Image (cartoon, rainbow, N blue to C red; front, side, top):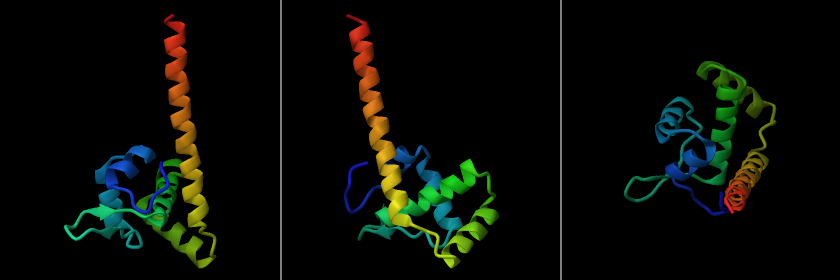
Length: 115
């Protein structure tokens, strides 16, 4: 994921391995997740929004919380000031970069094996 000010729903969904409709659903379920909109109404996500999405995904997919449980847990984390959204984004960005490097290296290996 390149470092830029705004990301499209498609970019976010691709990098995080989810569908764009999942992003829309999570926006309806988690009121604190409100991406900015352009003049024509298109959504655009900031780094902070992506960090929130990463936390939601981690709670739902990795820790198997329900939507209700994830809302409660996020509320607790905010209350205890344990949310580090900047670190969450940077961690995901590094994972994406490593994943992209791995894909390129695997393609190169296939090419070399074909020689």
